[in-house]
Amino acid sequence: MALITWLLDLPEHRRLVALLAGANLIGAAYGFLWYAGQLSTSPQYLWPVIPDSPLAALSFGLFLMALYLGRRIPLLEAFAYLSMIKYGLWTVLVLGQDMVINRAATFEGIHLTASHFIMAVQPVIFMRRLHPGLAAGAAAWAWFLFNDYMDYFQGTHPYLPDPSQIGYVRGVAYFTSLAAITCFVYFFRNHRSSELRSAP
Image (cartoon, rainbow, N blue to C red):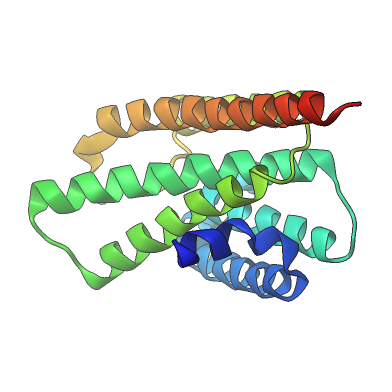
């Protein structure tokens, strides 16, 4: 219980916010290196829709930096929340399925699955206290619908451990887009309810 309470209070601790920002930016740098091969063989105009997880970690790191400095940027915040949930869950479900089917739990597979699970949890902690609103969320979600289209109709999805997974992977992408916006709206409604209860 003490650990859960500490995690839920994390947004109130500026030093921890700064450390978490640094961790996400380091993770983003590692992610971009992981995508280097795919980026090098893709036209530059497609780069914004290829490194999904590194862009999520980068946006969340920038959101946390802004928060540390006392600033709120609603569109960045919404993009960070939705992308961390979507691509965190996506990686857990895709790599998890691959490890179960092939009965091969490699160090990289376990590391990526665990780190992406942490990605998905982080925005939930912050959305309990901070929410950018539905307008910013709708704008960010439109991008992810476009990104799903590019990934699974134009072939910009990440390299898969098993290309025969594509049907499952496509379904996971749509599911995680829906899960991300559902979580976002749920916390928005909680915020509105709290504001109404505290109103004079």
